[in-house]
Image (cartoon, rainbow, N blue to C red; front, side):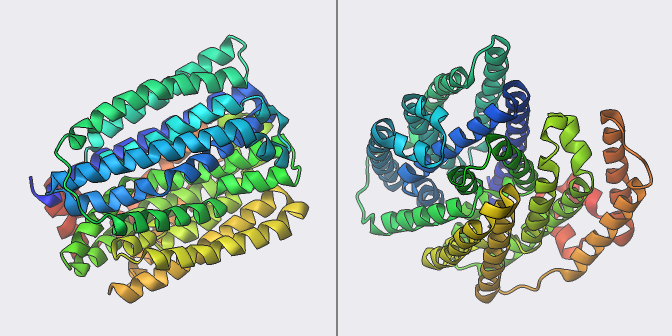
Length: 494
């Protein structure tokens, strides 16, 4: 199978995996928010923050390093086998160490964020962190071999079981501790299945080599993850807890961030992992023109879906949130609108694809320096804004930091690979979106059915508008036709 065909198949399954994953995560958040209530959903948000923090610490950047290096040596199974074995040994040691720290010293952090409820779940959290971290690395190993069909089914199984277990436990009057225990048991069995999924890559005899570059890349990527933590939701929740913001408001914040992030990743995440593997392969073959073309194609795909998607949910945020989560979470609407606005700007600038290109060009140190700047800005703004504006202050601080760092990364990407930003394309998408949004604004929405009909009308008018404006260039259409002839035939009209 040709590289292009293999990449295309992997992308399709990876995107299906991400789309289904975020839909299932969204469904899980609805089950938990409605079942636990705003107070205990806030505690659940703090638990997830706690797990993410320690999972990030014990990963040591191995997932990113494996995703970047496996494609470089995919024709040398002995090197890949050695890389995987060494990584799993390091992961086992780091995970065990972090789990012990959580059990014996995790109470310090729970007191720091004013969450005594978490203190009673430290042992469960330790086991869950070990399993969660293994699954993160295992998923990236699978993606690096383009085995995304397997990933699609396994992630669907895991998240489907989490939803079913949560619903049953809550219906049986179980508490949040019971829910987390169920998550841990399910994750254990799914981890075994993932291990069996990549076991064959561990079997070839190990070929020794110098692993210095791999380990250096891994540690640098790890530092980037730590900085990304400071730029993300989990650090904000930590800061909100530190400044004694109520559990309910932490829950509102988590819902606002989750919807904005889910929509963003729904649009762009099919390229996650796959793009780094492909760009790394292009760089190894000194084909930077293909990296540039790949960036432009991915950016256009994200804009053509992201701009109308985000603008619509910003316009109808209140009706969407109250319909899905109930009126108890209406305070999330304003928070979501602000967050969505920042993410819309990030999409226009290329967002995660900029960092992917920088990694592929083997400039991980540059990425680290840029993220350090963003992290410092976010910490300063959090300290300044959260005490007065609480959850809204955290969102403004993180939004400014994210857009700022994406803009810097975009500038450096354009320095290293030559391309012209598609301003004409963006203008046509903006016009098509405004036409569609103006049309839907003529009709009032008072219930879920009318919301669904309004969304359908928006999509129809948007498609009709881009048919008229024709934003795709002949080169775009040719690339799509090369990848998928029927799709290319369909899109030739746009």
